[in-house]
Structure formats: structure tokens, C-alpha cells
Amino acid sequence: MASGSRRPSKANLKAKPGKPTNITAQEQKDKRKRTLSFRRTGVSAEPTAVDTTYIPKVVPKSDDARKRIKKAIEKSYIFRGLDKDQIKTVIDAVEEEKHRPGDVIIKQGESGLNFYLIEAGSCNVYISKNQTTDPVIVHSYSSGDSFGELALLYDAPRAATVKASTDCILWAMDRGTFRAILMKSTSQKRDLYEEFLSNVPLLKTLDAYERSAIADVLECEYIKAGASIIVEGTPGDKFYFLEQGTAEAKTKGQSVMKYGVGDYFGELALLNNEPRAASVIAITDCKVCYIDGESFKRLLGKLEDILQRKKSEYAHATAAIH
Image (cartoon, rainbow, N blue to C red; front, side, top):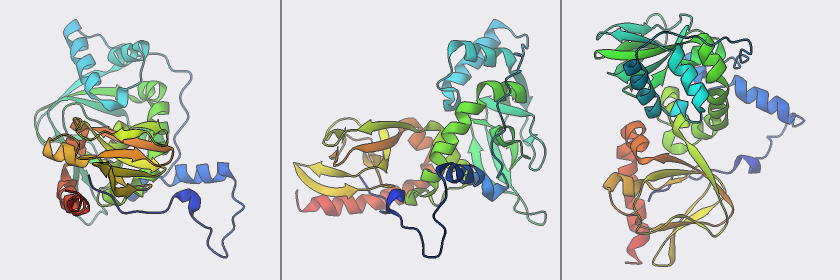
């Protein structure tokens, strides 16, 4: 049960001398929207307005295809929260695409026409920093993942190239359907968590694509002071970030570690496939964001070495008790 680097709550930060402080809340909100995490790849526009004149698109398909699409949708967190009518609209509208290894599905710099959901296969994401350097792989997608939403959300050129790395079956959603069904919920969630995740020390080594993938699967809950977030000895199925408040880890009734905004906990049980090694109790009212165990392994795999090294901190903290 490791702790990330501590940092002050944004609410406690003081304005620097000589800087104007008479900025309205709306101006601050607008500024956050303009400085998205994807500024590294050139996407810095505000989300375009949802299309209220949308006429649902219907692409004929077999019952088998509809079942396959529904199964693929159920794997993808970006569709979580849609009602039955919206899911039907998505199933009606998407079109099947099949790609061979090496096929370019979207190309950096081009206009975005579709959003893609992967039913089977895998794809690699490439980014070119400039025209004189070779593109580098920054991320990989597999079954249940989706991509292509950035250009549609922000009406901007593609921020990266995506190529099939294996034989792939994709479902392509047109711009109109995406904007009508997914744009509002996706944009709101990204805006809500982008700044918080970019300031979590553990995630500093992740690129913007990887942090956005985490934002898509985050779920949050509010915990009252004195209530348990994690209970010692229970199975571990979630990895937590502390977004608001303070908490502490306890074992055998004694406090062994304290957590503040931006810290994380709950990884030991997931890494070791063991019951929770300690309880975590809210000291103040808290807001925690969590990732389920499956997403933890899929999205945070490259951080496992860092997480494993943090185990020693917890072992040292509990040595005196045991």
C-alpha cells in the first residue's frame, strides 16, 4: 500500500506576488478547457457544440453483427452511462471495418471523420514530433478499446497515427453520431479529470494518451470522515487516487501511513493478488477516484516497477508493528 508524493491541495496554493488575482471562476474554467492534456500533440481547442439537429444513421446489419457490437460496447468504458436508446442508436450507426497488419486507420494531421471501437485485434499509436523525426509508438490498443475521439471532440486534426498491428475488426462511428451521443459525456469526464491526473506524481511518466485512457475508466465516490475506504483482510479489486481530503492506513489498530491529495493506495493487493494488507480510513471527508483491477493491470502495466519499489516504504512503516 504505497503512497505517491505529497503535494498541496490546489485550494491552498497562494497567488504569486505581482500576478493578478481578479480572475473569475468562469475565466479559470475556460482556461482549463483550452489547456488540455493533449496540447503536447497539438490539440488545444475547446470542444465543439453538440449537434442538436442530428438525424440517427442506420446501417443495415445482421442480428449476429448487432450482438457482436453490443458485446464490444460492453467492454468499452467510454459507452458506460448510455441508456438503452442511445446504445441502440450506436449499434444502428456503426459500420464494420477490417484491417490487416500495417494498415493506417487514422493519420496524424488529417481531419477526423470517425471514432473507432476495436472488436478484435490490436493497434499501435504513433506520434511524430516534427516532420524530420521518425514516428514513435506511444500507446497500444486492443479488444474493447476505442480511439479517434479527440479530433471529433475538439474539431482538430488527428493528433496521432494509428496502425493495425494485427488483423483487426473495428466498428466505425461517424462524426454526427459521436457528437450527438458521446461527445457531451466524454468531454465532461475528460475535463473533470485531466488536470487532476496530470498532477499526480505517479502518472508523470505517462503520456497524454495514457492519462486520458485512465480518465475514461475512473469512477469516483465520496467518503465521510471516519469511514473505511479499504478494509484490512478483504479482497482487493480497486486502485485508488485521493482527489480531496486526507486519509490514513492502519494495521492492527495503529496508523502506518497518511495520504493527501494526489496520493494513491490499494495497489499491493492487486500486484500480489492478496487480501488487503491494511485498512485505509478517511481522516476528513474525502473524494476518491478508483480504477478496477482489470483496468489497473491493462493501463498501469508500465508503472509496475515504480509500484513495486514503493512496496518497501510500506514494509518499513509496518516493520515496527509486526
